[in-house]
Image 1 (cartoon, rainbow, N blue to C red):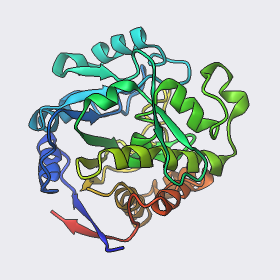
Image 2 (cartoon, rainbow, N blue to C red):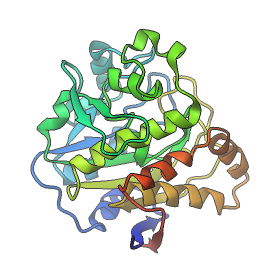
Image 3 (cartoon, rainbow, N blue to C red):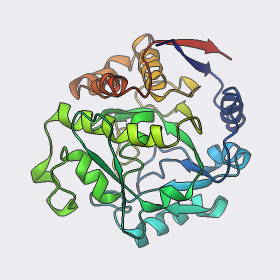
Image 4 (cartoon, rainbow, N blue to C red):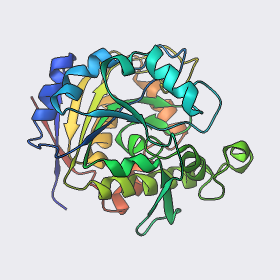
Amino acid sequence: MAKSTVYFTNELTPEAVVKMYRQLGIELPGKVAVKVHSGEDGNQNYLHPEFMKPVIDAVNGTVVECNTAYGGARNETPKHIELMKKHHWSDLFDVDIMDAEGPDVEWPVENGNVLKVNYLGKNIENYDSMLVLIHFKGHPMGGYGGALKQLSIGCASSAGKTYIHTGGKVTDQNILWENCAEQDTFLEAMADAASTVAKHFAGKIAYVAIMKNLSVDCDCCAVAEDPCMNDVGILSSLDPVALDRACIDLVINSNDPGRDHFMERVNSRHGTHTIDSAETLGIGTQAYELVKV
């Protein structure tokens, strides 16, 4: 497989997000879903809608999210809608909680290592293309949160999230935690789920990753550790595997004092196993060229 191109800038402005999307040379057709992380209630690190506004406006996109599979302000549609208002997403954009109403859609996983099917909020099928906006950071369960997590856990319905976390055992969030899969199985299930979204929108999907507020914790944590590293920049690619690999490599190759703490979180959770697994599914390559913009 040829190397994928990943673009990088150390500029960190709303305008730079647009520039990095434009760098990809893709015009997303039709109705555009823009996948963001809305931020759990109480989280201090999530990227605010104002930062994303120019790029979402540039693609005339609809902000999409799905309900979570654990307690908090986003596990039920009415609460999630209220939080989208509280965090001002609804003030600035059309917002679609894709699994607000069932039934979920079931997309088959081609050659999945763990899953045979992925459960997604049914509204995902209303969109012609997708812009995946990634806040790259650590994650308590996945090790890190990047493009592959946005495609998998991010687009899965509440039942789908449970299904991924349990390695395809159950879809009932009430029995999620006693059925959690072994760690590598969970990571492989994430890659499986990610592959369905990447393939569904193939040729009509773009990824922009913002390396800012680099906490070891995710934006899904109501109580998250403060960022441990300095901001790095913005990356973009048409390849989610290459993009995640490039983000990890920028952390590994930095001399930031917080690097080791960040990578301890990634490595203790086998985080890069998700990248390895996604590569085997053919949705991208870890061989990339980093082009500075």
